[in-house]
Length: 321
Image 1 (cartoon, rainbow, N blue to C red):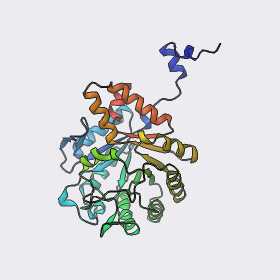
Image 2: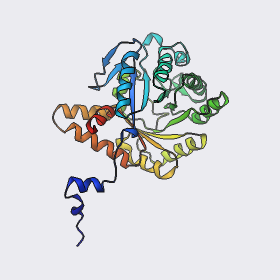
Image 3: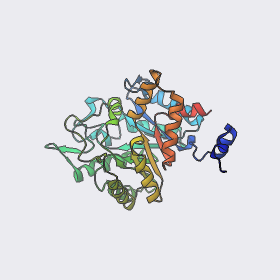
């Protein structure tokens, strides 16, 4: 008689038969950069996650590199005084964020540095594209996103991550990068980025929430599955090197769909709200944090994600060490 429990009877046997394992090399660690070099400010809605100045961030990156995490997605915390309607500081080479990117790549050339391409951190409107009369303009936004991508590539970043969800932006950015000699700069496209409630703590961290309206005209409807394949097909044809699903936990089916349909790596963003739920529940003793982190990251990889952006990266590698 076949008894599946025989393959579960000891930790040694469970380890031998384990189908999915998350490695440090699977993880991308998101970081929030402050303008003041020595600053360190905890995000109220993300206990244990800090916004860091460049001096503190360099130390954090060095520590993570030693633990085996070599990929970092760096987001700027932009003061309101530096914002305008056209997000001009996003492509200002003297802006603190771009200078910091150059310094990080100079000090850690073996790291993989990923940047975000969207207007919302730099825009007084708080939208990912250019706003005119309450409407987010698609093609006009591409010009600004292109300027942003070029200066980031000039800083030596390894991957740019268009998270704006404007139509045709992957092809536009790929052509622009290639024409300017940045053929080695990869595009990790936020392909299926849903209009989710789970982004709230991230927007708190960057103070980047929309000043009016919402993002439902450009981010995807959470009810839609087939549309993700349409978006992915377009990004693939336009030259994306990686496809991303955001958020991760409520969209494991989308991760699986993209993994089975496209022969390029699939990333998943385990977003801020997903982090905060675990942090809040574990603080109240409602679940065991370590077990929850391990189970969540395993589920994301099991669904098909090759890469996982997660705020749990640091504690995960510490759990495993």
